[in-house]
Image 1 (cartoon, rainbow, N blue to C red):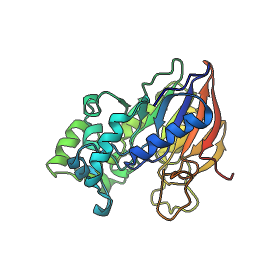
Image 2: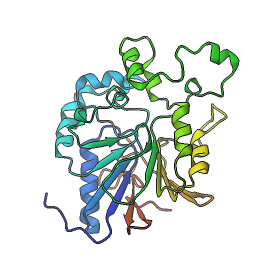
Image 3: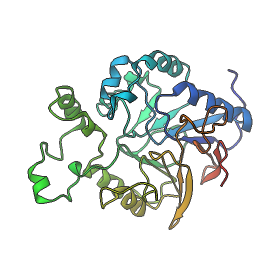
Image 4: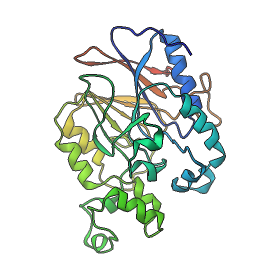
Length: 292
């Protein structure tokens, strides 16, 4: 496809959960370019992108086996080969974690920037973007009860490559690869304040329709410590926008879901469009547009 001419201010798109529908995401981004008449300069993902390029990668998908789709890998490979935008992402909780936690960019043909925790590499000079991969679980936190501490199978400082090895050997559950670590939360909270964009998979405050199992939300602690201009998140497949102190929070939708009304195959609020003016990040709209 012929590239559209770039405007003066770079167009940036943050996408919600894709869940391995890479081809549909490609169609969506191309449609954004067509509708705006602008070239997308950078794409960010809030996790659950789902680059299961090899059929064996699905062995590391956590959750019910009914969600495993190794038959989709040929289509994923073809869509990834055709992918043409710079992409930086954090992980969600449904990913090929053996390839992310034991990071090697060669696994993704050097077309992907990823970070477990910290500032993300990308193509936009001057733009500060921080992110945290994974979701919360007390197994990886310091503030647990004495009984939970005694029952811990691994020290908190176990490295991700070691955890991938232990998960391969089935010494630990592969779900452990989805949980961020205490030191990663601490790292985020220690960064220079006021990044332009913070990416989290889970929300910083609990959605009203979700029953809360754990009393603490490190995502909220990170937001309060960093005070970003914008925070984008996903995970709950619900588009929403609200403000916490000075931060504009944008929760993004899943790309598609059976039984829901789609716009050209994509659910409203799957993506957030921004532009960068070399000094500030400006929010343009969610896409496809929601009714809010």
